[in-house]
Amino acid sequence: MSGDAAVGKGRGPGVTEVPRPSQEDIDATFLGSAPVYTAEEVAERAGLPVEKARRLWRTLGFADRGEVRAYTEADVVALQTLGEVIDEGLLDLDIALNVARGVGLTMARLADWEVGALTGRADDLFREAGPEATHGETPASLLFARYGPRFEMLMAYAWRRHLAAAVTRMESTRAMDADPGTTHLTVGFADIVGFTALSNEVSRDAIGDIVEKFESRCADVISSHHGRLIKSMGDAVLFVNDDPMRSFTTAEGIINVIGRDKRMPEVRVGLATGSVVLRLGDVFGPPVNMASRLTAVARRNRIIVDAATAAALPRDQIESRPLPPRPVRGFGVVEPVAVRRP
Image 1 (cartoon, helix red, strand yellow):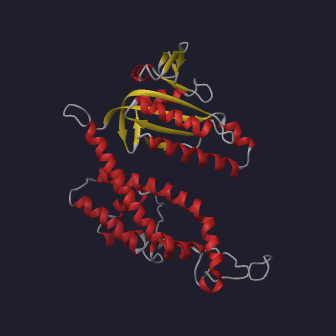
Image 2: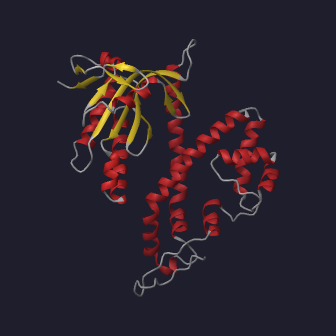
Image 3: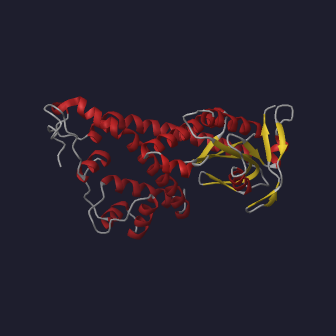
């Protein structure tokens, strides 16, 4: 379908109809050209065995298109670049696949996030521009032309900044006799109370707004207290701090901006301290599981911690109250600790 503007049926004269782009429109806008190659042709041009090319393609998160001409020159360049990195010995195939998987997962989520956030604005820009200015274009191509290159620059900048921060974290924990991927952290897990029941009671738009506010507010609080948001899961966030007190103030901040807001649901936060393994942008280990389990113990808008975190918090600033011992899945009988400021 072409991007020609038309008067929308039933919308009244002079109202610009938002066209639906064809697959060719989309490919031309975002990939630079329409697809012309098969998988075998891409592999040949990239200098890779076709099975290795297909494997790299799938690892990046893209569906195998069989013998369809579904690939562009951009696909050739991408696979050629990966092949060169492997051939030069900079990365072996396993590491290249590992990195490609991370890139694919991250970019897929970012792309979904962008499209969801910008679709309405793209339609508005299209209508504002009018038929004469939008001849041959679609809302996506119109927005991408104005926004794409600058956002590409922003992505490269953010990647370099986060890469520098990740290297700094790794170097700060590196020791000759220790695994550089293992470090001592306080892990926090915050979740929305009664999220399942809430999602059955309100509209999809309302639950979407709640989740968006929850994630964005939590991310802001975590960053402001020198923490790192590891992942968000809709009704929960997982974060880490290198200092237990900063983790406590992060938890306080989350409760203040979410649980104390009468327009938002209440939250619970669990904190646990110990050695964790850093892999693929995620954290693993007993403190992660413990922090998650403790949220089930916490009362609404309260912070519950494990014994290690309680012992590390300054007693002149934080009041601790041991709770009755109880079984915690995977840990046996545990004595959680409720913490708060006096």
